[in-house]
Image 1 (cartoon, rainbow, N blue to C red):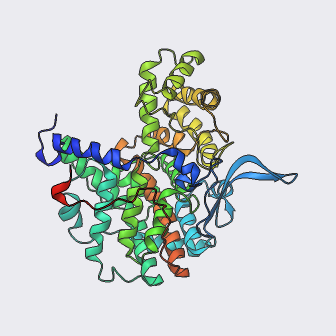
Image 2 (image 1 turned 90 degrees about the horizontal axis):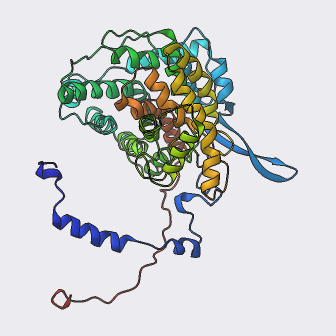
Length: 455
């Protein structure tokens, strides 16, 4: 039990929490009565249309004989299929993330010279203000790197003489700087936490300006700054697959929502980070890893389909792992037959598992990938298909790359900042109205009672 009075939950707080819970409850029947789209989605997973975008598109259906039917999922960045973008990356370079960032921000694929100039610009911005690491990152390091990252982003506001200028050129400058600095803010925050909380040696490597984003992450993270071309390549692919996913995902919608108020870039990105941190969003890959670690201790024979299947049913029945009733990494709000990011990831995962000696773990993942959709369909009423999402494999990839558990979600943020930036620029460019979604009040009207007459 904690002895820190600051975070103590007292009996008074427990009493007030009970009161708050009772007053906050709204019957699910009322959502049906008033046709409220909970989560801004209907029962079929179709989102409520709240905006327009040209940045990316998520497709999960096709029209056959005039009828809309489920189809293998596909993801497009500025009209280009992500599978084609990944295939088109030169095998001897690691600039895929930078190339796709250019595409998202400016709407076109760069020429060789444009890409070279863009990478040089990002490298130039990859420098933190003087003493920022000592004065900010090293002070009161958090055990959660997403909170550390958000705090650093908000603090950068104080170092920017044009922090509140939301003209498009200035916002672009701020976004490019944040894209460049996210690897440093994330990794340095982790190094500080590891040193002050775990007593490990402190490493603060200066980034090499000639390296790509993926290479930079590995260079400043590892004590010897060494990595293999395969490791950098796979991390680069991971960044590409996570950098954008339509305007309707929670953190990107947050970007649009907060940007519509006219606030500064640092406040917008900090809000988006808060959204991404959640276990239902960017933190899902951590849950997948934790679930599999628990599974490996509870299942004696990883090759026994019946034993693995029983564990998956126990998950759904809230009898295993965190008792949430979920098989993490399975299912998506939009995709039904397949998540294209998971499909792309899978081939790389299999190759890396063979090189790293994780064949048994990969076989277990493959079995769960095959069994879980059928078990979910047997146990629950579902309105569309269920398949592995990108989180199902991403944590496994990071583990094979020997990346620390604490950086799994920040790596997602390092990628997604490119998409957030593109959407912020889009929101600013059309200068739309502030977003004010409607909520229907279903509470009763009450007569005021003087305080000395209340029971």
